[in-house]
Image (cartoon, rainbow, N blue to C red; front, side):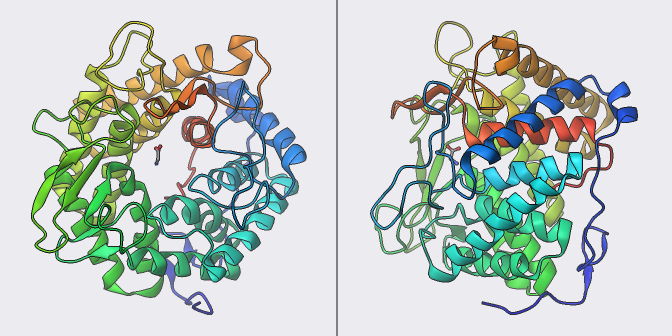
Length: 414
Ligand code: GLY
């Protein structure tokens, strides 16, 4: 692993990279002007009680009957161990709660997870995945930004290096799933990968090594060319020939059909292209984010919370509230980057969707007991997994959406 952070300035304008960003404490004054104040307070209270329930362990990807259980045991992993793609969302929520409250208990919980994520990447436990970006951005880059932790920095760079091994030539994309020798997965990427790129952007800023930024630029440009379809919907996955780099075609794993539009994928597109457009300065990515946003907004039911696939716009199919929460963050990110008409439309849609989530998709609103922050998300409808349950990513992005709207000057982790 690399040994120490450089003595250079934080590219996001935060000054010396070892100086933590100021914690944005939630104040009574702010709560007077934010309509989401009480929703934010409720989420922070649930994060606090979930820390007491789980200690150093990790909840499972989704709730079962509204309750999180510890992540199940797997070969080589005890119950509650750090494996899979979603464990970073749990410390991510703790860091958001720390920023909102300044309470040391949230920081202590997050720091305990930093140590576990350092161990995970050092030992190479369950790191054969592009999801290293989701995992390490929230578990290590976030605490590095807030506390200047050298251990978090080292683990973040090590994870970025592991992610770089998945960059596949000549296609110029980061392989999403599985072992690098698996012929079924070579040359395949998925739209979710856009959220894994900020770890590489951060590594480029921190090390000064252009190779990380070059991988981000090429990967995102290829996705903008192919994973966004001519009608502005998106494929979930797209494959390039690993030998020639030629485009092969798109398919789905979690959507209704290969040619339908998986709702969460479209939301990953809005947020992911908006983030990467800023990182690369590539106007094609900004346009891709707008196209993803416009298609999503045109395929929402009346309350603004999508069905799990955008092919459905009415009826009894389950909604995916997590897609809505991600979309709120994406629209919020995109609004300052676009022209005045779009900016107003995206900001107002973000606020309306968040209102709907608060009013209709939270335990308080439903009058149910649940330790999820957000109810009614869908992990995989075709797989019958986590349908109409809370999810760690739904909870994280719901909390991020509330923080984006309530905490002035909050700086994203991505
Ligand atoms: N990144 C996996 C998912 O959104 O389900």
